[in-house]
Length: 283
Image (cartoon, rainbow, N blue to C red; front, top):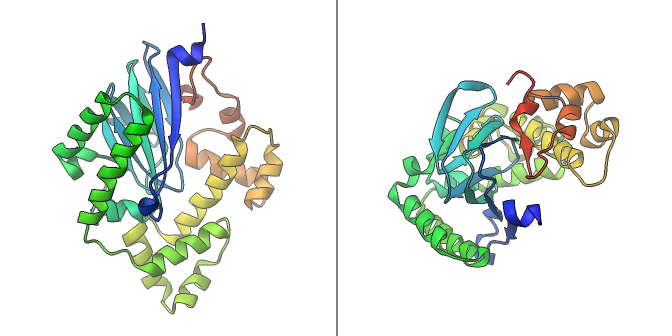
């Protein structure tokens, strides 16, 4: 028996051309292991929207495990910490990766101000998200599901009157292009802004400060190397991502994940993708 075919599947989709200045990618997931599944979900340098049409998730932050929410549809901004996500055995969803400023545009300016790191989409969009999930569950192919998400997001962006400052988009791209190593002061100076004004505007549109964004970008670069099919030594990853040494990388990885990079690299499910939550040592 093909375990992968019987237990899980994954599909990727590309947003239509008119959405590509906002939306990076779609990924569809489906799994039916018929048992409880508990994962660690890492932080990214993208905002994430998840449209579920299976079991509800129980979600808590690695940094605050005593508090959790149960939801089927949610969004995570860059201000979030790594998450512990549990479902009871049957899950289908589409994960949407957005450029950092796109979430605030999509949610008409409300997203960056939410105090919690995980936001239930029904708090932002109401019943329309439940209707979207229902329609997705009725479709039989990932291609048709991605097309429906295209339509939904297009309408949401059209309806939003929230303006994203082009200076902030430019600053993010500069930070990303440099791997998170550009001087924040130099960015502000190039824009002709004070450091304080730059940090205020950046946080308003992105949800975190420029300095925090640079850390997130560096970490994401290192994480991609750590999880690449080719094995990379931790010292080589630290050097490539611009950390001063392997110890610095290990400390930074632990602050973003709750575990060491070596332990994370070795943690796997036997029959499912992703990282088991018990990689967190004191869980």
